[in-house]
Amino acid sequence: MITYDSPIYFIPKDINYKLSPNAVEQIKILLLEKNNVSFEDHDTIQFADVGENFETVSCPFCNVNLMELWLEAIDSCYEEEGFTNLDIITPCCQRKTSLHNLVYNFPQGFYKTMIKIEPEFKHSLTIEQIAIELDQITNTQWRIILPHY
Image 1 (tube, rainbow, N blue to C red):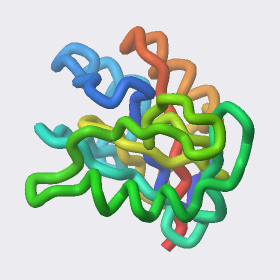
Image 2: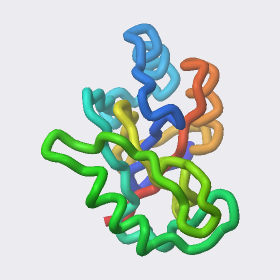
Image 3: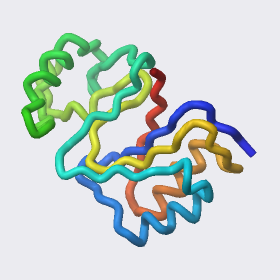
Image 4: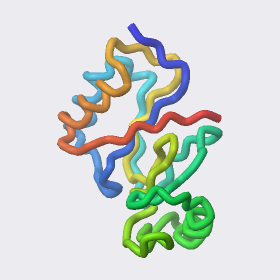
């Protein structure tokens, strides 16, 4: 068994993806430890950050550092009810993308649905194997977020 000492978040690569009740039940069976697993479901877009693990954010097309743009874009995309339009034009390439699709050193991103595994979680599967199983159960891809606070 592998013991995970830090929280692990899984967010779908499709920001608007929502888990069905059937998928939630299948995921609970997969993860076995129901007490250490929780599900978040929001009507508005949320940001899953990595806390102290946040290092850089860069362009998905040319890899230019976009930290300054990111800080401005986060502020402009956030309103009282949460994040709205995440679309941006990269200043380096002048190409359209989303804040969600930027390259984060230590992956993070935006979501409406999140699966959270709390510290002290034990499982026979690696984090990557769990993500693959989630992909199969939900028919969507998941991003692994490893926060450190």
